[in-house]
Amino acid sequence: MLKFLCHKERNRDWKALEGVGFATRQVGNVTKPTVIISQEGDKVVIRTQSTFKNTEISFHLGEEFDETTADDRNCKSVVSLDGDKLIHVQKWDGKETNFVREIKDGKMVMTLTFGDVVAVRHYEKA
Image (cartoon, rainbow, N blue to C red; front, side, top):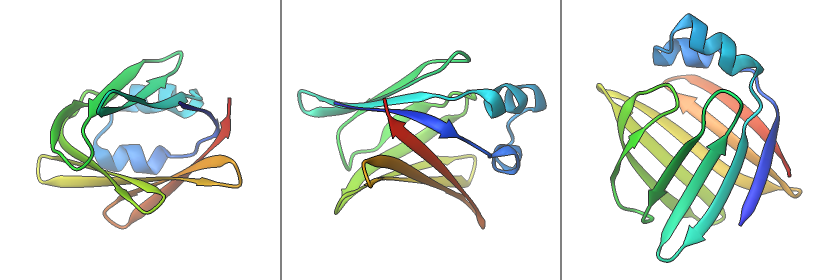
């Protein structure tokens, strides 16, 4: 099990482009989530915990699954491994978001891409 705490997050423009409402963006901008990645049987589980909202996704690598995001979007998602990177693709309403999670110097770095906008979140080991 890997457990990481987000130490800094600046993604105001990112969430606005995704269509996230103003109030939700304001709460999200001050929230520092903890992400727990584990394997349970043949599935991978990603839990995101914060004072705002907790979410959990459980999936088989490389297989599409239904995901409801923290901001209540309903997506078709696929998570796969590419070397040492965990690639997470969400699709909804003709849009696509990509998350790349990787460990660098003992920290998790998550690069988010939506169209031509890129945001990076850094997580410290908890």
